[in-house]
Amino acid sequence: MPWEPIKLNSGYYMPSIAFGTWKTGNGQGPVDQIKQALGNGYNHIDTAQAYKNEEETGVALKETELSRSDVFVTTKYSGTNGLDIPTSIKNSLSNLGLSDVDLYLVHAPRLAVPDIPTCWAQMEKVKDDGLAKSIGISNFGVKDMETLVASARIKPAVNQILLHPYVYERQKPILEYAAKNGIIIEAYSALIPITKSPGGPLDKPLNEIAAKFGATTEQILMAWTKAKGAVVVTSSSKRTRLQGYIAAGDITLSPEDIAAIDAAGALGEEK
Image (tube, rainbow, N blue to C red; front, side, top):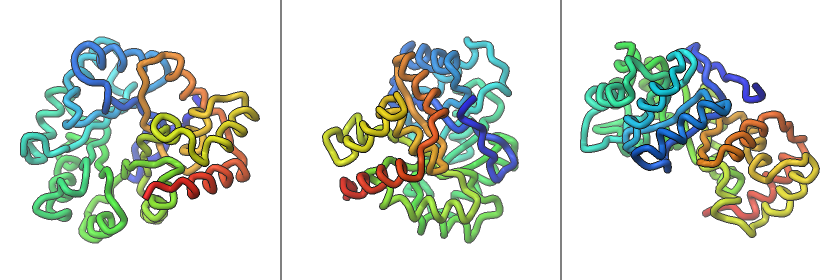
């Protein structure tokens, strides 16, 4: 597989591309999409309390008949319905039909009530109790991470953040802090420069680099994200796109390619 597993500071390995259920909705749709992903090279499923499709994720996992060790499952504490972390993780596991998850994240720093150290101590207990193999965070900035690490007994294994070339300069300090502290970055919405912000400075270098590799611009953005050392969380209902994203793991961008994308990203930097 071109997307090599990444070793977390917890000692566990995480697949470096994930299928995310953020926008897949409810009902049979997400069940079918997750099963399709699992059948096309994805063995990491990323869901959350707030996505309201943990049950569908659980159905898909059961219907595929894959062994538990074959799939890396991430879910998140989203503070849904005002529930606390101990209650939320038990509900999530019940919804998923699992006895533990591979990774449990705090979905955003605003959910850390009454404060980050207290919240993180509850997350550490989730790991101590064997309900999650690894624990981490999402959407935490550098100051949030500094506060957490200062009091942590167990460092977060990952920080899942928005990452694409138009926000790279803004997010770079997070990547640097994470690297210094052995925290893996997971990237969501990596394709925004194509899907939501076409016509910007990135179009030219992406098209040129894609032509050079005989690839799509989506694949080049995936390869760029991988080159930054980040795990990619992506999604599509289309089998061909899912397969294309897996194939993007074989693309190795040159330092010049990466620099061209960085420079164009900085020109179109989202404020």
